[in-house]
Image 1: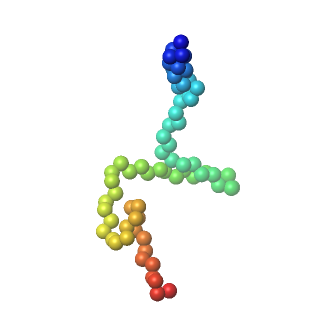
Image 2: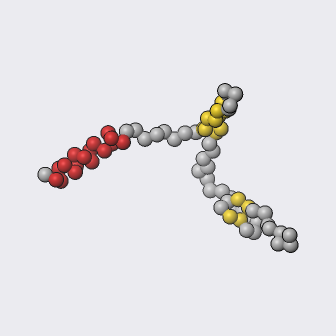
Length: 69
């Protein structure tokens, strides 16, 4: 009895959640004056080229800190 109840509730789970949101390709921003602008979202499928500079973190290179200040 409990086993069939669990299967029945699992079958109704997609109905309770609803459709998943579609992946967006841009962000729409509104201006205070009433205008809008769409900013495209770039999703890279290829890996980033390796950084050749020292101190490279998270795919972006940082400036060196001047300790003499």
